Length: 449
Ligand code: HEM
Image 1: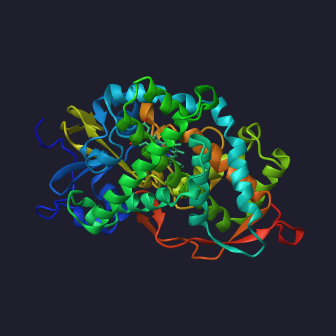
Image 2 (image 1 turned 90 degrees about the vertical axis):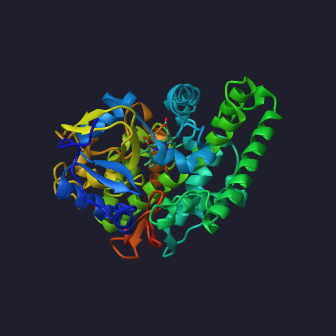
Image 3 (image 1 turned 180 degrees about the horizontal axis):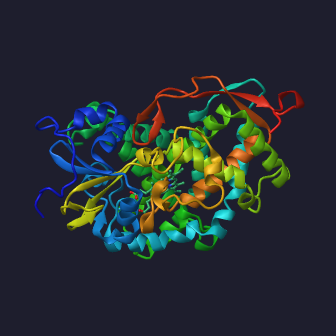
């Protein structure tokens, strides 16, 4: 396909580095400006690579669902993450992906997920018992430790918080892929300090997950349970999964599963602290539904809590964009997209687009009540189609359980700035701590919903 009039319009960047400088300066403003000036399918260049932003829900649905077989994750994603998780579920393609998705799906069936709720509730409960009235927490650190703990206990049957390997490797790996920094666009073979630290930590992490497998294999199969670690180990023993696939999946789940959920919880807590009346409504709902404990049966009844989480994920999507590569020539919204083009699907832009959302900057959970005529893919925090987030239900259950456990005993009051500065790192992160003051429930502290 030639790049003629029907190729999506876009700005001319500087020679060689294309639009990379603008992009790494303020990626959110860059994409919003691209939409406003050139439309919801628009082109740009990064280091000589032709890329297109796709910010129209119908085109997003076409890529993720209707024509999904015409798109793969592509070089932009695999290049940098290959040695850490190239053969794991997140990056694998074709048959390898299909087989793994089928192998791992049972760990995420609704009935199986229900059995994780007591661990989720217990982990949040332990946190709450350490708090006291008036204490100020750095909410992102608190939530990160909590989600890491939940993930380790439920999917791998271990207390990962006892071992610093995971948190240190996590920091090093996330720093390596921090797109807010110019060097994350540089090849990872360059011996920069970030790259060297990344390699060192990655090796330690691989040794750690190998050790977890060895411990599990040392147990009799009937005593192993059926968590994700046992499922993976079983497939390795049956020669249906290679060692590299095993390691890459362990690392995939450690990374895909904890920071994203921690950020989801952080932004929900922030929105609640900004809106005390909404917080009071949630507490009333939680009091009515939960009887001291938060159980799996309670979760589907926490409707308002679900609306609040959806609205927080709309305003602050932890995954603020992701990529695909066109595997053949395709047509999107009337434009011709040649094979090999990198496509970026930016939740940030779509979730705040006035075309689909009235008053898009305002927190309004009612948007998610009842039917709407909004296009389905105007809200896609967990992606969509066959490659949608396998942990979506897990994350939703965890967020509800943790919030319900906390709000049964405490409310949040905002201490830091009402609107945090955000950075486009590996995930959407606040640039500094978000500080919340904890208020123990008492009549004096009660807000009437
Ligand atoms: C609020 C929390 C979360 C958010 C916002 C989120 C977001 C996403 C998104 C947008 C994708 C699709 C990426 C793409 O299509 O390129 C994805 C995929 C994935 N997520 Fe999540 N995620 C969350 C929690 C989790 C959890 C808790 C787990 C694991 C326990 C998990 C594991 C994965 C995996 C393995 C994939 C790849 C699935 C595949 O390709 O088949 N995520 N996630």
